[in-house]
Picture (tube, rainbow, N blue to C red):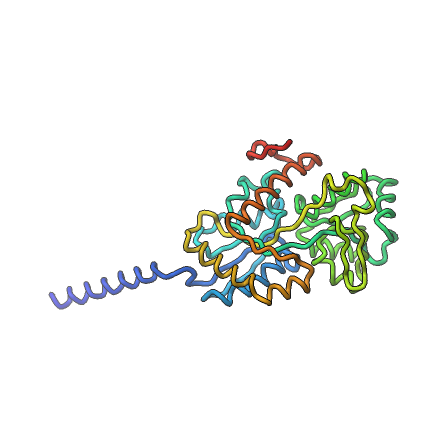
Length: 335
């Protein structure tokens, strides 16, 4: 009996010890999933797949990237990750466009719910299919003036930075387009190529290959600076229309986030891998080749940038009549 009891006790101690050892494993000890809130092939998706592949080199596990699209301003993906454990094994791939989810009624949290990482961003521009009758932005605006609300325009999802830039162009030029939302930049651009819409507002990074391939015709940059794509110079809309600086530019901040309630160990491990990845030649070369500006902010620094974006975007949506939730109810004071 003593021998049997001793064996049972030894097995129990071994099992307990194994359980304690498993619980004590350092993060991460199993694969991580990043759920991108926008569609495959778009800027947020591409950046996340690139940075996660680079971060894997500095972590003992793999990072799998999936897409959880839909909702208001990417709210479906954020809610999906919000509902996962805050143990650092489910990250959310997001962009500045997600800061409008709350003011549009798609999410019930301020953006500081997240502990964010910013990889970078690319400036927006307005383009038309190569066979479009609109040769210049002036042609397009004149057509919209003649038939308000009749020209279909793609600008990713409602509340995205591309949508806000479209609203700003409308407000700055006094015209109205027929906004048609798509589940990301890639579907919106495909719609332009298919003739479903007459124009598309997305980023230079997302459009560059289509422009160089002769499929899209760029009409104007939505930043104060001109841009060069191959041997094509795209003029700034600021040089054509006065007063756009009241609404533009609105710039991208693309990256990912973990729950802000995650442990310090989780945050420290992710920051270390992120910093090493961002310092690599791979990321620098990728950004240069794909028309992105490098960011590299994380934690409190990235949160401060997203807070400014959240407040700016919320008040811009309110000014443009596109907010469904009063920003003041979210603690955002607009002048």
